[in-house]
Amino acid sequence: MKQSQFEHLHQAQWLAFEHLLVLLESGNARPDASETFARDYRRLCQHLSLARQRGYSSHLVDSLQHLAMRGHQQLYRRRHAVGASILVFVLAGFPRLVRQQWRFVALAGLLFFGSLLLTGVLVYSFPDLVYSLMDPQRVAQTEAMYDPDLTRLGPAAQRLPDQDWMMFGYYIMNNIGIAFQTFASGLLLGVGSLFFLLFNGLTIGAVAGHLTEIGYIQTFWPFVIGHGAFELTAIALSGAAGLKLGWALVAPGRLSRGRALREAAGIAIQLVYGVIVMLLIAAFIEAYWSSKTSFSVEVKYSVGALLWLLVIAYLTLGGRQHAPD
Image 1 (cartoon, rainbow, N blue to C red):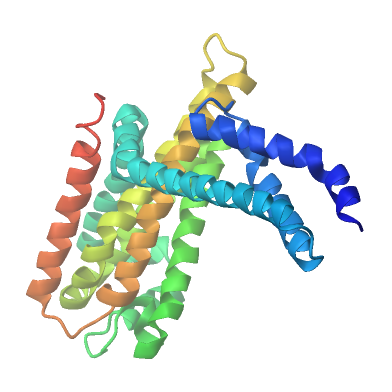
Image 2: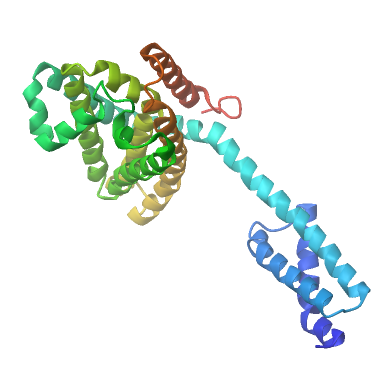
């Protein structure tokens, strides 16, 4: 293709891209203008590559090169802005949102942690009760994972040390699956979230009470105290997000149920984003710290206590310096 034909075919696209660059550089672009930017930038880079391969004039190549450089600067700036926005949300926006939704958070926390503690006490006091909540095979498997003679604890007990990354992936999938189940079931008028909050609380409480009663205190509690700060809190928060959805359907107020659900979903999804971050942290701690027995019980408890204090401080104080609750 001759250069004149190439220019005639694509000149309008280059001018439109340059106009978009001017708007982006001046900060006057519409919010939706950046949606096509990446596509237009890639197309311009393709045109620049073709112009070089075909030996077109240096004037055309240099002008396209200049547009590509300006486009690259805008692309980097946009990626940096997205990264900064994510960081601001994690550090300030998410804990602030948790406090704004304190009613749902409090209800979810009461259901989950309340059922967990109550079941733990009951199973510890009445040992045979565990078999009413879990089948004997699962009880035996749980006992095997926290045997005091093991060098690695929890689901990683049968794994080799160099397979921690596999357990990290397993923990991510398992934890996010539980959280998503607890959240998404809120669409069943909130009943699903209520059920899974109670179910998870009962199950975890039964395990804790049983292992404590049979004397596995030195293995079970040092294992769970570290990652539990993030994991258990995340499960409760996923339930709060599900209850938010359910309440929008049960009591939409003056809005239609569809609109109420859409507005509630916008908030609930943000809660879930934060929950995912917490679960990623929990999975990392569980795979690379909790399962290790090379550290003393005192160290495990100390680190676990610090992590619980960190989570509490994060959710209660995070973002207060940026905006009021």
